[in-house]
Each structure stands twice: as structure tokens, then as C-alpha cells.
Length: 355
Ligand SMILES: *Cc1c(COP(=O)(O)O)cnc(C)c1O
Image: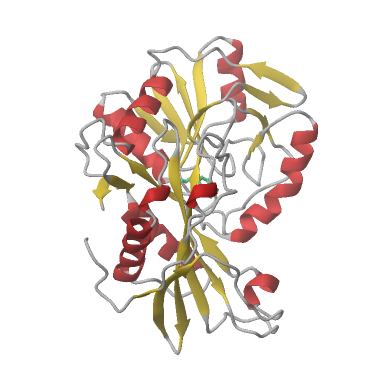
């Protein structure tokens, strides 16, 4: 994919903010690049595809998304290679998933040419914003929301699709301590846990805040029915290494089908490491920790990549996990993923797209 194959108007910024960025102190999610891609859905079709300077939106106070939450998003990353090229990772999977979320939330799907065309043009225009330091990337946030200025409850007829980007460093400053949540839930069967929709995050903030007050960084959600089985960690899927196997909860309509997750599963298969995608009970994990059988636990996600979990809290007891060894699967897959993202390792899987 080289150029947009649809009408795309580009208005460049008159004043780039690039000089003001301290690339040694990026943090996560605070800094936005110069431009954004915008398309409008009206009269049953996507139109007015354009790239404009990043800036505020003007919205009616009755904007449907603000009241009833018809809003979905994606998160992806672009990396700089040593040769100075730009690599996108599995972008078509993000496009696919956005459209799945759209269907669940009664929103229109986005044609591939608009998603990929808008994305590649935007990243090309702001390619100077891609950081090259280790662990850093250009984070990309595509999202769609309902724009009808109408406060009756119904699916909106109009929508905005926007992509903006920003340079980021690691998501976690240190390995997270996580709490297994046994009261609140993130999603239930038949709900919207499998969609990357805004409301899933809104509902998770309060339980996460309580956990933070107890000294944890993240939650691990359990199933809504029994609180007996591990689901995921809110912005990350969770994986365990035990018994020489990679074990991770299977994806259902209560968990998000993470692209990093399926990437790691594919790498494990490729390396000949047995993988079990199945129900995992909390008891099984606690027992494995107590018996010294749990080699590691980590979260996987675009933002967090592979994040080793330092400790797991369950019913008031903190279980410290062993330090991550250099030759462990968790460390090796983290390093290998980093090398694929940045073009240091040959992409034998065909996951990256040079733009
Ligand atoms: C985005 C997200 C993930 C991670 O998915 P990736 O495709 O790997 O980035 C996991 N869980 C939830 C709830 C998410 O929103």
C-alpha cells in the first residue's frame, strides 16, 4: 500500500510542535503529533477524508457518543528501523477488529482503503515523530464515535472516524503488581467485553482505583458468574508459563481478542513450545505459585507489549513471582517481538508493513 486510493485532502500544519518534544522524557499518551486523519459518516457513506492539523473538535452538547457511549477505538504502533524505514505491525488485524467492534455497537464498518490509506498517509506525513530509542514507538489511536446531535436512545446515523498519533515510551515504568478482582466485573457473557469500546474502560476505572489504593497497578478480571476463572487484565491479555507450557485464557465474548496475544501464541507454536488456550482457574494459578511451578506471568498488549507481572494479589495475600530469567520464554518473546517490530529480526510471519 503506497498511496491513498480515495480522495484525500491534506492540510499541513503551519507550526510543527516537534521541536518542543523532549524525546528523552516521552511518558505515555501525553504528546500528540502534528496531524490527524478525519472522515465523516453521513447519508450512509464515509466521506470528506482529510488530514488536518491535530486540534480540538467542535461538538454539539447533544453528541450521541457523549451520552450513550457509542464509541470504539484501536491502539497500534509504528516503529523506526535502523535503516530509517517505518514499520507498521499487523495493521490489518486492527482494521478487522475495529470493524468487529463497530458491528457490536451498531456502528458502520470502515472500508480497508480508508483505514489503511488514511493511516499510511498520516504516518508518512508525521514520520519525524517516530522515536527511535529502545522501547519507544509512535502510538496510533484510530477511533470512531457517534455524532448525531440527538438525545433519544437509538443508533446514531452519523459518525466521525479519526486517527491521531503520538510518540510514547514504555507503558509501565516498572513491572506491575496486579490484583485478582473477585467482586467487580469487566464484562459478562453476552455483553460487550469482546468489543474495544469506550464504556468497558469507564466501568473499570472505579475497581482499578480501589485496587490502586491497596497498592496494585492493575486488575486481573475474573468471570462474572463465579469469579473463579481468569479473564484478562483490562488493557492486556494475561499469559502464564508453567510446566514448560504457555497457558492463556481462551478468547470469548467476554475478553478482547488481543493482537499481541495471538502473535505470542504464534511465536510459541513456531518455537515448538506447547500452548494451552483454555479456562484457567484462579485456584490453579495460586496453587502453581505456592508449589513453585509458575515460571512467569505477564500481560500482553500493544501499549504494554510484554509486561512481566511482579506480584499477584488474591484475597488479601500478595504472591511474589520469581524474577524473570534471561532465557525464560517471557523474556525471549519480549526481545524477539521488539526485534520484529523494529525490523532487527527478519519478519518470517509477514506481520510488518513498510510504509
Ligand atoms: C486493546 C486491549 C488488549 C490488548 O490488545 P492488543 O491487540 O494486543 O493491543 C487487551 N485487552 C483489552 C480489554 C484491550 O482493550
